[in-house]
Amino acid sequence: MSERSQLQTGRTAAHDSAFLRACRREPVPHTPVWFMRQAGRSLPEYRKVREGTAMLESCMRPDLVTEITLQPVRRHNVDAAIFFSDIVVPLKAIGIDLDIKPGVGPVVAQPIRSRADLERLRPLDADDVKYVTEAIGMLTAELGATPLIGFAGAPFTLASYLVEGGPSRNHEHTKALMYGDPELWADLLDRLADITAAFLKVQIEAGASAVQLFDSWVGALAPADYRRSVMPASAKVFDAVADYGVPRIHFGVGTGELLGLMGEAGADVVGVDWRIPMDEAARRVGPGKALQGNLDPAVLFAGHEAVETKAREVLDAAAKLEGHVFNLGHGVLPTTDPDALTRLVAYVHEQTAR
Ligand code: CP3
Image (cartoon, rainbow, N blue to C red; front, side, top):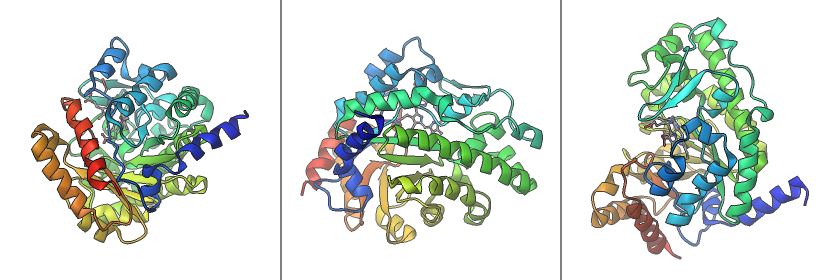
């Protein structure tokens, strides 16, 4: 089979999955469920295969990526797989000196703060991330009708790591650049938008059935600043992949006040954290978009009865939505009991079976 027809076969197999139907706001057999960070440290089988291999090195090994991506699908019966990688992989691939430090996160050797620094952000070519194309080819063959979600970091969240040099509570260097040198900031975000768009295209062309743009830290901004200084770059990313027709999901933490704008930026599905109920999120996002969310990941530590009560609240608040993808309000916490996740998937499926 030619590469293209193989790809089309893969997408066709997943086309009628509950997850993709919900993203398209079509009727579903049950509410689909997946979890951000479903692959990772909460799983003993993940810790085992990752032993002795650094995080970024793992992301460049198609055999490991395939195994780790499949682990939560096998174990939890989730409705979608998320590609195992990291938001900083495309930056590493264009030669930025960075590492992912265990328990800390991405650390950048020389932060990007001046116009001269921008030159280090060259465009991403598909050949820079051949291991991604290879891994997705292997994965879609294994996944069959289970859709694969590709992802990338949004320009603001990537800029935050690059400008701060690592994780940050207050994003002061990032905001200093944004407020103090709007022109340089716009150019920085524009370059990142191109890199992010190229990274998403690689994943879609390799066979991903949907993509999620993680703007994890953009909740640190007021709506007017988001609209002026961030939205054009995120919109450029969504626009660049619009023609593929795969659902585009947009997620951030603490973004209650930004949900409408994040939808407007070009998402088909807006991700919601646990701080506002799904019906209120739907009101803020407006018609024509599906929503994803939003159980507090910490609820999974409270025992199954509490998990069911809180999951039921999410389902009730989402009952009138045009399309609902059940997820946590942020990633699975590393010390979560994996059995609590498996039971939660079964509960949502059983409660919503139509
Ligand atoms: O299952 C999945 O969700 C897919 C894999 C995935 C990872 N990172 C793997 C990973 C995804 C989607 C990401 C995205 C990501 N990476 C985001 C956006 C999502 C979010 O949580 O808001 C961000 C902000 C990052 C940057 C990053 N990378 C952080 C903050 C960390 C955690 C550092 C730590 O050790 O606590 C990483 C490392 C990372 N990325 C791990 C995993 C499984 C842990 C590495 C390990 O297992 O040693």
